[in-house]
Image (cartoon, rainbow over all chains, first blue to last red; front, side, top):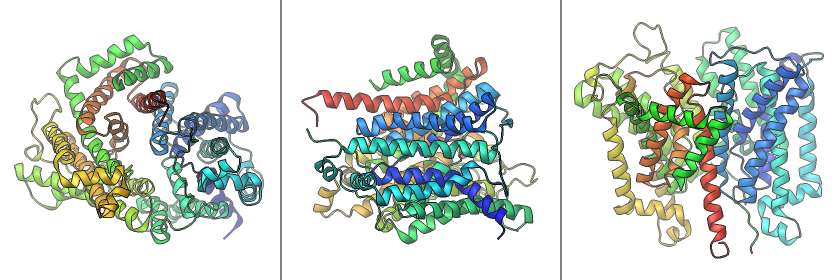
Length: 290
Length: 329
């Protein structure tokens, strides 16, 4: 395996990897973010718009992060402040993001699905760029924060048994707000990198389920940052492999190759089951008793 | 109240996307009810919303989040198209067997997700979503492979002969007998929850699994049953669209009904007749927004935004009402 393939692996794995890293933080605090797909899509669209307007891919990345964060805060208002059902709210956020980006895209660029010439991220050496370089340090940072810091400990407590965290003097809602912000940042970076760094354009519903795959990868990677990252790179690798296979004319129908990451994720989930490691209060709204 | 919130969402969405709300609403209304073509469009779009929406209701009532309506719809359509290609069926027998095959196909896929949730503890939210993508790729492959039309020009299955398709009322419109299937399904699901023992168990397991277990109800079995029924309804929707509207399936067969129907089920209060009302409303919005897209830059994609805003609005309204009454829960 040569170096450029390794970089390719990281590039294709980065969107799902970053998104699932953020999702793992949220899930550890007890939030299951079904709206991840929508947040990524909003990030992808805002990123493309901003980088086209300013000519700078870095401003594009920032704009993508901002858009996703905004959506994440809206979602937080419903699932944290109002303690409403996380699956229902997340599904609605996805619909809003899908509808809004598609409507705006058609209104601005027509429905012909033209390719936009988005300024590319500058690359160094064997195809590295800023985001690819940042992925591994970010995983290490999240792993350290979650395992070694007081904040990480409190956050995990909120996902396991929020009443205990409250009894120890912490606000479960505030901790979940921070987790939602972290998730929004990662989702936005993932989405903006997908459009600016990987595709170089935007298309309607271009995230194509990567947000949902990222949610599955959190379970697959047992809620551990390095495990989640490894699972995502594997899936990204299967995506990179698909282009390799097509180029070499391997005799599998290419639909089977596209479906492969989803099948692999399913099979792994079936084999390992939910098992241990899932936060006990995952998906349960927390309201302080009055 | 729900209707008021949906209307407010329509106005907000139109305003945000720069369409004058008054003329926008009148364009939508004209496209949805203006003439017999509009009414037919509305009803044709409401049919899959009703069937998939009922499917969502059955699963969610049992406490299983079936987000896989899209995949089950596709597998339903595929099963019907496969049957049409495999057996030389014609006439009413053909229609009934297509619909049965579609329901069976959808039921198998959803049952699998239910089985995984019950026996392997993998949440259905995740598996049904993954199965959606697998189903969509299977569709993409089938219409370019085994089910492709004989000339092998386009990614489409062979067209059904018109005598095997669901009958139409008026040759000028697409309105087909599937509307009766949809209404019958609404009545059947209403009766299922109101009168049948299994329907009672489904509600019990969803609302209070502890009580269900204390009464020696097999909660796992009930969940699997609910998923199979849910998938059968979603698959049936695919079969009705196949045998009613197009008579063939292509790679664009899915059209997002599985996702559009989730808010429909929620706004219908997870009740059979509520789903019917919500489906008519959103069928009208879909049909009307096609008309809107001819006069403005905004098209049917705006309906997704309206749906999302409506659900969030209704959730917030219920929440505030709950908080306001008697000092909270």
